[in-house]
Figure (cartoon, rainbow, N blue to C red):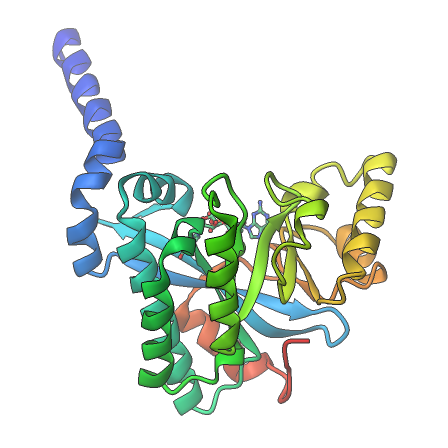
Length: 282
Ligand code: C2E
Ligand code: CA
C-alpha cells in the first residue's frame, strides 16, 4: 500500500475510534441508546463471609454498543454533567426491580439487590415517588432493595439529602454509603446520615501489603463497627485480603476473588444453584 494512503487510513481509523467514544458523541447518542436498550444490567454477587455463600448482588451497568462494552466510568460522569443521569438512573432502577420480580416469580431466592444511584438524585424527591410506584408495580418487598449512594461534592444541600434518605428509609428501602475511604465520605460525616450499611472502597485495600496501611485499615473497620451496621468490603482480589476482612468482622464480601460482574443470564444460573435458602441482609 502506498505510504500516504496508509497514513490517511490510520488517521481516519483512529479519528473514528476516538470520536465513537468522545464525550460529545456519547452525549448525542445516549437517549437513543437508552430507548434501544443498549444499557445492560450486570450483577456482581455479594457473599456473606460466615455462610461463604452468595446473598445478594450489586447492579453494575454496561453500555453495549455494536458489540463494544463501554464501562460506567466513561459514561456516568458525562450523564451527571449533562443531567441525563436522572433518566438513566430511572431506567436502571426500573429494570433492576423488574428482574427482582422475575426471580421472585421463578422461585429464586435472593437476600438483597443493591442499586447505585447518583448523588445528584438527592434533591430529586420525584425519584422517591417513582421508586414507590415501582415497588408496587413489581410487587417487591422493600427491604430486599439497597440504594447505594456515594458522598461526593454533589451533595451540596445536606438538609435535602437527609430528607431524601429518610424518605427512602420510610419506604422500607435500605441505604448504603458507597465507596467509604475513597474521597468525601469520612468518619466525622458518618453521623449525619443514618446508613443501613457501609461499603468499604477497594482503595482501602490498595496498600494491603504494607503493614502500616493494613493496621490503619483494621483501626478504621473497628471504628466503623461501632455504627452497628453490616459492612460490605468491595474489590477483594485475594485470599489474604478476604481472611483479614473476615477476621475484622466485615459481614459481606464482594470482588473478583469471588465473582466478576456478569449478565443476568449467568447470575440467574448462580441463583438457581448456589444460594442458601435463607439469607437476609443483616
Ligand atoms: P462502584 O459503585 O464503586 O462499583 C465498584 C466498581 O468496582 C465496579 O466498577 C466493579 O466492576 C469494580 N470491581 C468489583 N470488584 C472488583 C475487584 O475485585 N477489583 C477491581 N479492580 N474492581 C472491582 P464498574 O462496574 O466499572 O463501575 C464503576 C462505577 O460506576 C461504580 O463504582 C458506580 O459508582 C458507577 N455505576 C456502575 N453502574 C451504575 C449504575 O447502574 N448507576 C449509577 N448511577 N452508577 C453506576
Ligand atoms: Ca456501588
